[in-house]
Image (cartoon, rainbow, N blue to C red; front, side, top):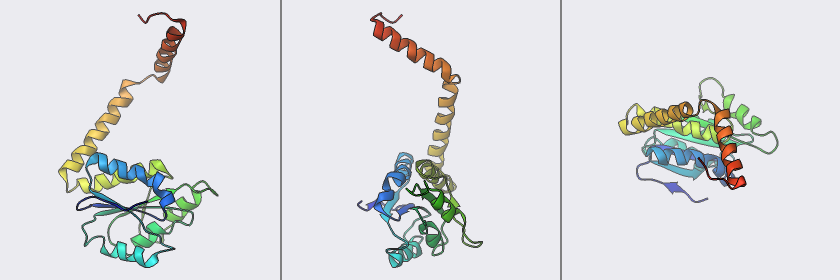
Length: 187
């Protein structure tokens, strides 16, 4: 996976391995959708600890305001990153093969008092919510980001309200299939 960077990034999206990208891509997609300048980088707490420490220490000076850190297995990246910066660090547990991400979740959530990491759900949902939470944090200062988040929430509400009875939608779709299969024209 190549390094991705936008001009003057406000959010850093880091992961322990390029195999974490399919999960963290959801966070990058939300940032892009909301117009949040961000960068994406592989930074391993275990394989490149000095690079990880340098990244975290320089993040604020480089203009970052939030770090989203995804990791699987032992999942030390979010906590180690948080120990090297005063920026908010949002941890995304990546689903692991052995324990389906429970190991990652517990590793990120069980930080000792004094080094907080905001821990999200396992997998893609966690990556999406990490980006939404980053947008909410940034929205305190950046009106355009706040309004993009507000529009997103309104759209979510409208989507739910437009389909209050999922059984009715399923019946309508089934009826359309039957009509199509029988060769009759829709009325």
